[in-house]
Length: 366
Image 1 (cartoon, rainbow, N blue to C red):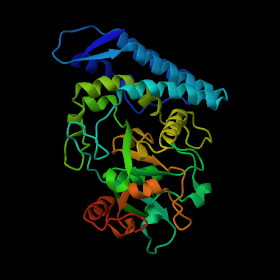
Image 2 (spheres, helix red, strand yellow):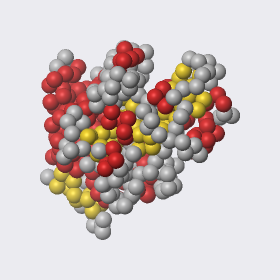
Image 3 (cartoon, one colour):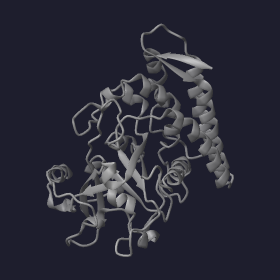
């Protein structure tokens, strides 16, 4: 069944606090919690009326239902102890979603999304033990030789390194629970190397950083050229894709009720997505290495979700050399500054300003 959705109807669907993200839950029966959310969402879609409007979006409700059913099945399979079946179900959902991708920003030079170039600055903050000079590799991903130090995260499993970045230092510090009175930390600014001819890498990002309320509120998110994030969402194709992608974004966006528990049901879907990404990047395509990241808002808390955007890029699994126990794809995809100590600045924003003015950027093996 195809629904014809107007802008006003889109607003009616998502201007509902029950669908706003991130979501809190009781910590009991994650599969049932997802089922309730998906039923509520589908019910709202099915009650749509075809109002006359000059801007309309066609959406296939059957595809939305299929994505919801497959994601919930993958969660239930996982909870029942069948991780392979969980992934197979999730993979079927991704086949539907990738037919109508949610694309907002450009990543590789070959992409052209309404001439919008995502010339963004990204940051990484790492806690250290000594107040000594550090090179760029210290703020890169955890080296392969230290896999035992990699804990379970929302978009990565224990023992498998990923490069986590954020759009500002405040958010970086929030994510790692940095306490300036109890620890030392260093920060660096990152830039994507977008030239595919130079790095032989095609870069793309799965977009999960959009919340329903972002379409209607005056958000403070801006890119490098100070364009409003909200203005970029005022696009019928983006809204159409969002209707389909909402179930996946929501399933990845539950706040943990108890962060001390060893198992987090909230991580099932994000980790299945990361597994899907890792399979996609396993082999080069058309002569190019594949680098696929995920962009998402923080789910550490409601407050953190409004602080900016996080990015995660998994390693390829390959090691450049014994001298550089790092992912060769990531090594040629990012330039970064040398680390700056946060303690050398009055506050985090002063450090961020200094990093933006630091043009000594290079690859970690340079």
